Length: 113
Ligand code: 5GP
Ligand code: ZN
Image (cartoon, rainbow, N blue to C red; front, side, top):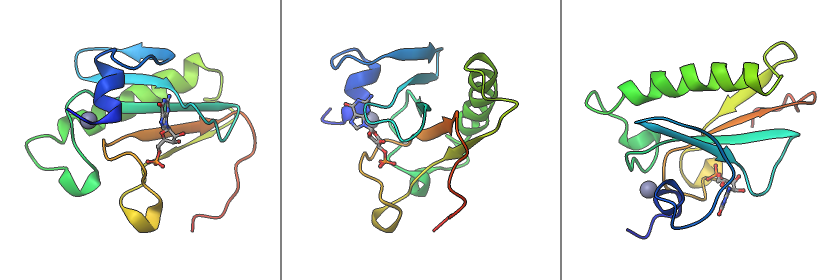
């Protein structure tokens, strides 16, 4: 498997783990865009939102549960945060293993595009 995030999930490539359970892995982004910048990923290899189906979509709601829990633990639940996923070239997706950026710890830019 040549996927970078699959290698991070299975420990082949080191990461700063924030959270792990049976279906989800979360770790600090190597190039943080905000004081808190965590990536939350399904352990199952799903390339992007384009590949979410009725069969694999349960993990997405679970990822949002994890995001809410981590936001509390990391102290940004009250100040606010953003959960973002980029899909494809125009959105700037660089790693083709579905991931959700959890960003906070400072006022975030309001531009969405
Ligand atoms: P994308 O641009 O695909 O939405 O987000 C990919 C993210 O993965 C980027 O924010 C980038 O900094 C992060 N990233 C890329 N390679 C690594 C790595 O080896 N380790 C960690 N922790 N993050 C990475
Ligand atoms: Zn993968």
